[in-house]
Structure formats: C-alpha cells, structure tokens
Image (cartoon, one colour):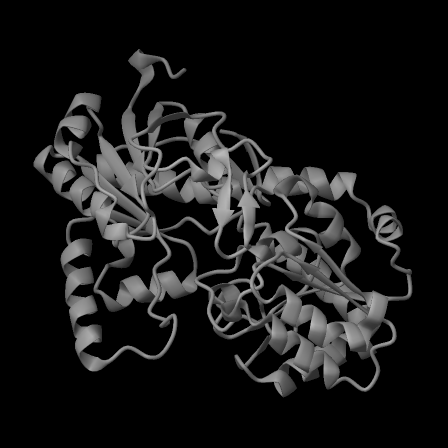
Length: 412
C-alpha cells in the first residue's frame, strides 16, 4: 500500500470491466512512488466467465486481471451493449469522498464517462483520457450530418479533458483534427502484457511448439488469431490462399472461434486437408505456443481500432500482414520492414503479400527480427510512462515512475 504521507497524486480510473490488456498497466501504475490509484468497474463478466458473442463460447481469462492494484466494483451486471445506460449516479459524491487529484477515463460513449467528467470539473479534479481515438468509420462512411454532430460532441467533450494519452498515430491525428495542442498529448502506446509474453517466449520454443502441433520444420505457418466474425474477414484469407500456386508446404493456424468457424473450415479444409489447424478459443496462458510455432501473422480485418494481436505476434518475432483498416498499421506494420499492408477486401493483394513470404523463406525471419525490435517501444512500461507524464502536467508536478529502456522497466 502507498504510504499516505508520500502520496502526491490520488487517481481514480473508471472503466467498464476488468480487461486483460489493461490489468498489467494498472499494476505498473500502482507501483509508481507517490501515486495512489483505485480502478472502478461496472461489470465482472470477464472475471466470472460469460458467453462472448464474438467467440461464441464462454470466456473467463486465465491470467490474473484483479491482482496488483486496488479496485472497486460499482456494479457487476452492467449491460455493456447499451453504453449510454452504464452510469455512475453518485459520481460527484464518490470523487469528492476519495479526494482524487485526477480521474482517468478511456472513452466518451458511456454514461459514466460523461458523469465522471462533469463531477471532476465540479470538484476541481483534473481529467486524463486515454482512448481508442479514431476517425476511421467502422462500417459504411458517415453521412455529413452524423459527421458534424459527432465532431461537435467530441469538441464539447474534449474541452473538458485536461490531458490526453494517445495510443498511436491514428489517435494522435484524431486529436489534432479536434484542435488538441501537442502540449496536452502524451504517447502512451497500446500494449499487451509484455512481461507475460516474454515469459511465454522463453517457455514455448519454436521447436517444441511445432513438435507438439505436429508441424514440420520445412512448413510455412500462417497464423490467424481472433474472433471468427465477418469484421475480421477470415474468409478473405482463405480466398487469398486459394490464389497461391502452391500451398503444399503451408500450414494455416486459426486460433479463435465464432460464427464463421464452420464456413472457414468448409472453405479451407479441401485445400489444406490436415494442414488446417483450428484449436478454437485459446486462453492467454497458452497463446505463446501458437505464436512460437508460426512464421507470419495475418490480420485481414475490414476494421480494427488497433489490433493487439499484432503486438503479441511481433513480441514473438513475427512479421504481420494486415489490411490498411487495421488501426495499428501506421505504428507497427512498416512496409517491407516489419510486415506488409494491403487494401481491405482485396484477396488478390493479400495473396501477393503471402506469395512473397512463401517464396522467400528468409524474408519472414528477417522482418520478424525487425518487428520484435520495433514493438519494444510499445510496452507496458512505455504506456505507464506516458500516463505518468500526462498526470504530471495535469496535477502540476512530476509523477515519477519507472525509466523505460528497450521496453523493459527499471527503477528510477
């Protein structure tokens, strides 16, 4: 527990539910000298296990997501499919009672986020925001009226935020378009549990992982990891594979589940036979063996705000082929250096990328080394450092945390 006499900033974090990608960040922040934080949740479905509509199976994460930081459940059964109704009715009293110096939110669509911002301003509390900022439409392009209304709302909301943490280049551009000055923006990159995946990288070796999955040394392994839903476009990958001249040495690992599982298998099995591997949903503690066995990650999605599987894959030394609608492509997928980017929905363009990797076996290894070095800047420690800097500007004094060096935290 933080020494009360040493506390220089009390931070209240408000988020919908425990998230496996956020928990490592909260743990690092909780160890920051002088920073006393508490995370507030509105649902515990990710802890107790619940049917995930995307995966189509019950999901409860098998890594600790409620350890190493203080937290409180405002509620446990909020309907997260109706964001406007996820509310914090006692926001002003709660923020006042905790004597917060700052609050942090991650979005602008939930009822509680608007309530927290209003209550913070009424109590003289600073507001920090780290969100999936983006202007890329999720489906069809927005109409003129909806664009104007959205822009007006965002400008109103952002005017009530003191500092912003942007997760990547698309988020920075989004904020810049809304008139947010660079002095109020801090890079706090989207990150995965870097310590967990470094541990798995040591545990799951390539040779052992391939042996356990009955994959030969001479086979080229493509990995798709995610929900088998239309937005992720797994069937586009199958169409691209069908456009390759030879696939006899190609193994396709499809890690995940969802409504398109049967369609994917029906399309790919005749072409790949037993070289199609579909283990279904794989929990966090076992993902490493699939990354270790693979040569290349493919994420052909029609839309991704970011695409954290790219972070995971690159930490294992895999290059990535992604569509230009995958949000992280500007940051992580450097063309010809850490991977390749293709036009979304274009099976022929994806096939051309895959053909280059399949025909030049050393290409994946070379770009994979670059990818691992590049993604080191997108670590848990780097994310925490950006939030610490944003807090420091907001509250008027430095929040000293951990020095970041090559993605590995060390004491200041």
